[in-house]
Image (cartoon, rainbow, N blue to C red):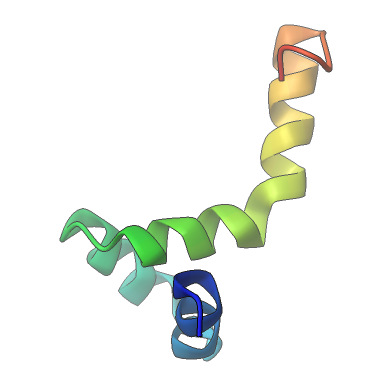
Length: 56
């Protein structure tokens, strides 16, 4: 199982506070999971802020 797949099954319960706690503690897979969960929103925010899809 890949790290992201393992993280997905671990964090699927939905308590993002626990995910953030693990990120602060240095858990890279928790960070990757959080980014994966919010990827589209983050991209749209970056694109709107930068006004350039290639820079986003």
